[in-house]
Every structure is written in structure tokens, then in C-alpha cells.
Amino acid sequence: MLNINDIFVILALVIGCAITIFVAVLEIFILIFIWEGTWNYKPDKRRGINLDMLISESSGDASLARFQLLIFTFVISMSLVLIITSNKPPAFPTAIPDQILGLLGISSTSYVLGKALQTQVKAPPIEPPATEPPPLPPEQHSDPYS
Image 1 (cartoon, rainbow, N blue to C red):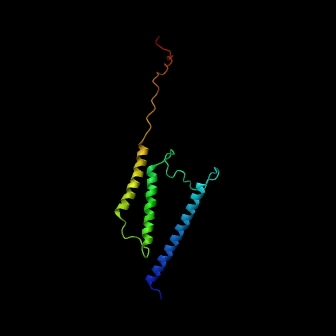
Image 2 (spheres, rainbow, N blue to C red):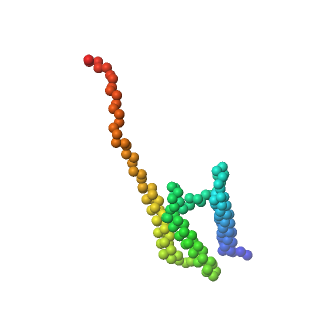
Image 3 (cartoon, helix red, strand yellow):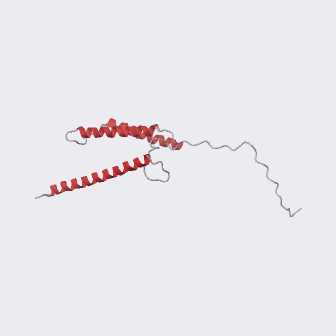
């Protein structure tokens, strides 16, 4: 006979498996959209996620802050996966070192500050030419007292 704790354990496993399957299917669809967007050179085809400007600014120039954030995120996530899978049995670490979180915070902050500074840069105002405008024509009006 199953007691209430066994039922909750089974329920937690079922919900965990359902969420894992949902996230896996979602990731597969995102990868398919990235693949189609990367190779999508047909202008009439509007499907896919295009990664051409992933580490570029809107002007097309390369962005060091975006590249740094991308690389740091991949390195830290892969390190965390390696740490989790190297434990016997695999388990999440009890504490994540402050240095790792600090490096990720510095990288994220440099990206945010770069974007903030980029929006603050304004083009200098266009000066009007130094020539004088043409004179206005004389007003013609009738003077009732003349």
C-alpha cells in the first residue's frame, strides 16, 4: 500500500519528467529555428532566428561587450555542467564560488554600461549656414489716415 509520501514522490517525478520533456522539445524547436534562420537567404521566407547580428551593434560593428558576455556565459555554464556531472552521483554543488558569480556580474555590467553609454552619445546639432536669409518683401497695406 502506498502512503502519502510515496504518492508525492511519484507526483514530483511525473511533474519533473513532464517539465523536462517540455523544455527539451522547446530547445529542439529553438535549435531548428536557429538552423533555418542561419541558412535563410530567401527574402520571401520569414521563418527562423537569424544570428548574423548576435555580437554586433545595430550599426554592424563588432561589440566586445556582447562577445565577452557570450563567452563568459558559455564558459561558466559548461563549467557548472562539468561540476554537476563529475559528482558521484551527479548533484548540484552546495555553493557556487563568489569569484564565478563576480566574473559573470562584471561581464553583464560591462554589457549594460556599454549599451547605456551608447544611447547617451548624440550627434552634434547641425549648424545652419552662416549666410543671411533673403530680405522679406515690403508689406503693402493701405494707411487709412494718409
